[in-house]
Length: 222
Image (cartoon, rainbow, N blue to C red; front, top):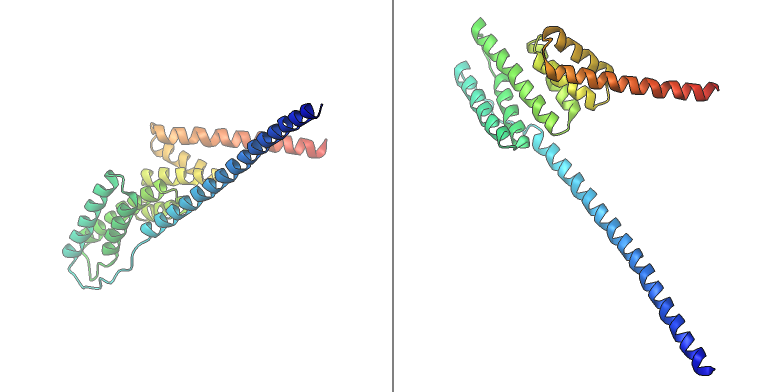
């Protein structure tokens, strides 16, 4: 009988040890998973900070008083480099080059001929739109809106800038603004498929939100 009890005790002890090991294993696994998640989040935040720092215009010490054509060529050269960087998927560095090109445009001094002034304004608008595209891809939608506004300041009927701004508004959940931009583009270009899709998405979103609001009010007053 004593032997039986001893054997039973050993079996129970072994079973308990096994259960404890399993439980501890789950605890350790959960702890490891939490640590890995924290590490991934920290890496993601660090990457976002690197993107923001890289996309911000760098300090500019170029105060030379250059002729219009010299300064304009420098702007165009930076724009060409930015196009290559953008095409290679190097969005952050492309944004930096576009910003440098735009800085050259702003440094144009002296009396300009009407033709020179128009060339400079056109390039400013184009570069602002390029920067808007970069910031959209970097998920910095408010900055995208700001550069679209700048592009539209130089060319009020620029449907590309209006459409890009509408898409940024959509990401910012500013649906009324996105709706207005989509309609504005379609009024000028009825065949614009991208604007039509944007309009469709925004209207569907507004419909869903309206239904949700109705249900909330029904619960409040039922």
